[in-house]
Length: 104
Image 1 (cartoon, rainbow, N blue to C red):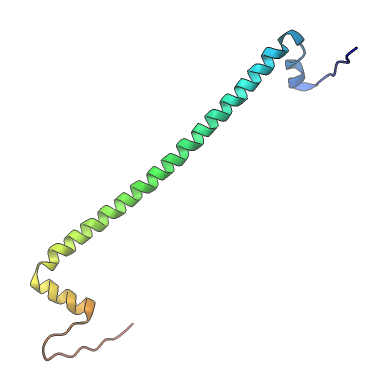
Image 2 (image 1 turned 135 degrees about the vertical axis):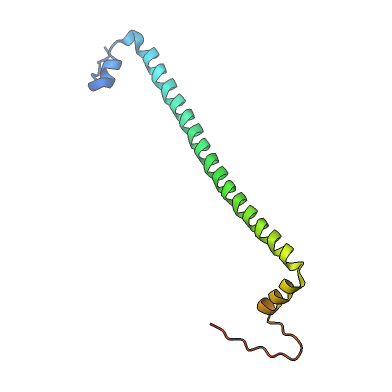
């Protein structure tokens, strides 16, 4: 004769009635699988949102760089600014001038 094993606590009460044992076990398995699938989906959604936020920040940075470059391009069309820029950036000199570079 098979000996019944008593399981205590909440889990034991779930499995006391042998006629409903299969359905209760099936319900637990389906619930666990459902929670696992939902959990995976939530993790995927969170990762996607983080990636989208990162791309939005990059987009904002690139738009700022484009605005700065557009401003610089407009300024470089002026001969006065172009001369000033060349002198400062590339240490260029005019006729009969000497340049002394002082590094900080």
